[in-house]
Length: 282
Image (cartoon, rainbow, N blue to C red; front, side):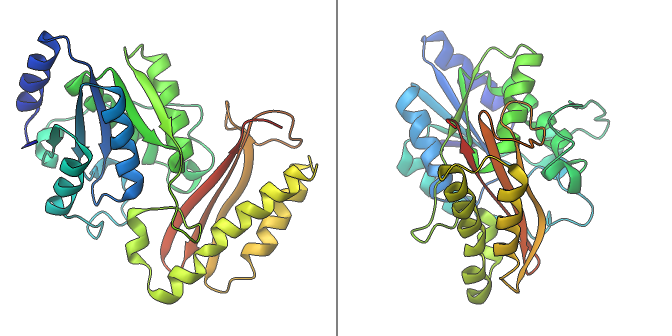
């Protein structure tokens, strides 16, 4: 496995692979990899001849008061996980490699991004779409892999690929959880032991929503209010949002009649965590 830092090195390597007729999978990450990321790499290795993992903490998707400086980084640890999983190349650019001093072009979207995480992080998805679009152009993958934990991001990337005619397949992969249900996340490292225990309220509330839907409840407001009441039983939890939205449009629903995304964002102490459940069959 190789680690490279420049666009030219990535393109040279991928060109060699493509000339041999090999397929290429891309797993975009911000590093500090965990079992959730590994599941994406495993899937990519299974479905492609070669796999590129990008490790880049993208400054464009962080707001001025967010955790860019403190976001966890450990390239040696990431490289060990990638190599063990069978990845072939890590692209680990510096910000100056991705964004030249005169950089002034962006990919923006005026649907799917206004609600959920976009409401409290208004610049986030412009940064996500721009960096992912750049990675698609740099790598030219046949398939790109994203986790369902970032469900809004997955929906946005799929829509961007359709809108801009990227010639690749976006593959969504299931959430990977700890044995007690907490969704794997690089930001879990911010939690102290008390906060780590408190964070289980996210999974418990989603399970409550799932239980209500499976018992026949179809009023989104009833499900949402029950989940909010449960989260509010945890003193360390502060709700950013609890929403039930159409899985295709990400617009709020009043009545659950088709595929729906139940998405939540909750602060545990100062750490913002997200989680969700997708109901494909109602």
